[in-house]
Length: 305
Image 1: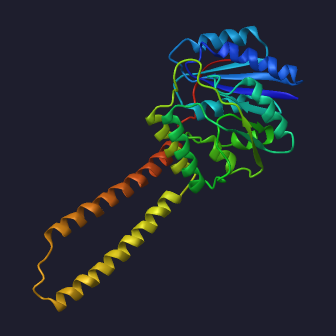
Image 2 (image 1 turned 180 degrees about the horizontal axis):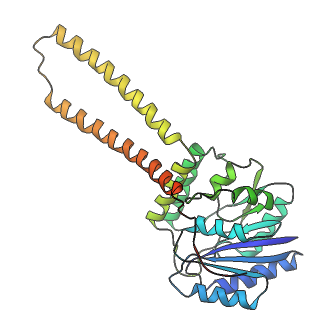
Image 3 (image 1 turned 180 degrees about the vertical axis):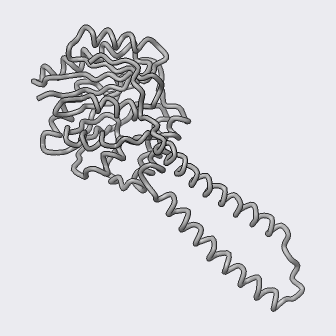
């Protein structure tokens, strides 16, 4: 059984060699054949050179260097297009997920599941990352119908037939978990260990997290539009009720003064709502435009396969 270990690499020059060695040792000792698909997402350090040397020295290592930074999910999509194994294991390059835990995921998926996610008793991320993950979990539950019991971890294993379905998506803004959940409901999850980051710091900034959330909102759900449509109907109904109240009040008490402040507040409020709604529509149209004009998921600079 061949296992493809897909690793998106960004500023991982210090850790990637040891990670490949440790994963290879763990999987071979468990009786698996292994191949590595390393995708360097235009790192700022010498990760590309380190990965290239690994690929040239080891027949079981494939290396793809991207010409520009495309984001983690795009890099993972790239690696899935190059994998050839029976299962694809997706793992980050920072050792927060110990290589020894991969066997737990593989044991679980062989029970017949399409995808197996990792979950944690206690995460060792920073407070900011934990908050972001929690927010992402809540939003995904309502926008893409994620089961409440499922934690969307980046550390997971996917069966090859599901991988074939995922890579059919050619849009420029992939969201891996959204593609998985719209393709199957045959999933499972297992508890694994989670360690502190050994080197450097998380590459996820606030802007990257916001971009990821927008990909989920806009590309994989129309619920935001429906929410604003519903909100618009509620506001219209409330406005109608208040109009009736003011009309009755004016009839009963003709001397009631007109409210300048309430008018200004109302105008500012509804103008703000309209601008937000127009911004949301602009996001949808902008992504449709980029998709229509053929914006690529990634651009390959160099490959060693």
